[in-house]
Amino acid sequence: MRDKDLLKALLKDGWTEVRVHGSHHIIQKTIKLKPFPYTVKMFRLVC
Image (cartoon, rainbow, N blue to C red):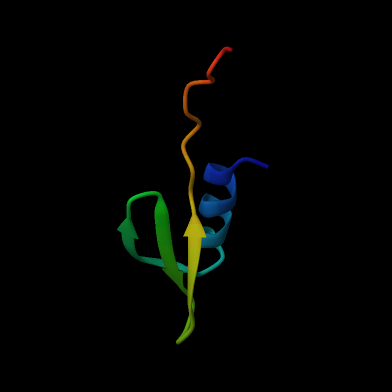
């Protein structure tokens, strides 16, 4: 499961996205806040 799919499943389950700060999507279901690090795949460095 990719990060994007997990975020979509959580939002479908009733979680709401409170804010986005950089690659961290802050989601909330009731009172508790949980950070969800949504990382973007960067270029691979070839040595």
